[in-house]
Length: 209
Image (cartoon, rainbow, N blue to C red):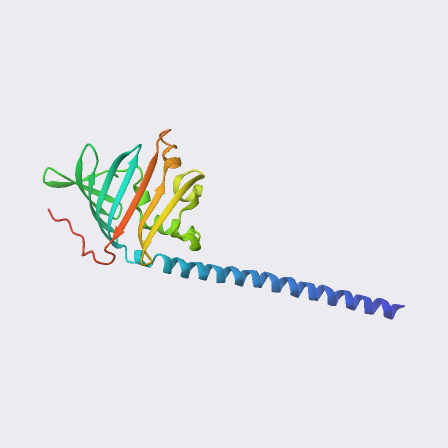
């Protein structure tokens, strides 16, 4: 009888050991899988946004609020941008260096404020983040993208994103920002169209005047 109990105890501990090894293996497998998924996602994101890698391109950003258009037309090279701001009320020349805005006024460039509430959406890093979250199989088609609170708009809202490609190069990103706008002004229809061209053809940007 004692021998049977001893054998039963040994079998019990062997089973426990096998279960422990199994669970450790499962945990490590999941960790490895997550690491591999992250690596794949990083590779896909890098390939998907390769045209933005050097942050060197010409742009035309069209912000439309209740059918009234404001246009930002210029060029970007790394952490510098030079653009013309054109609205129904004015046309002004700007330089952006890092996060500092300079506006041409009376033959001089003066420090000024961000010219748009939506300027953060011009940030290429935000655009890359939006693209990386879209379904890779439908990235050239209409898609719905859920903007998370911590990322872009300060609230959980549903916004439509359209991406147009030419020869697998991103030419246009169109974002419906109506929900974002309604956080500040109700009943406004807001659309942002980001047009890109001349990738890696922009020379060093310097203040000319």
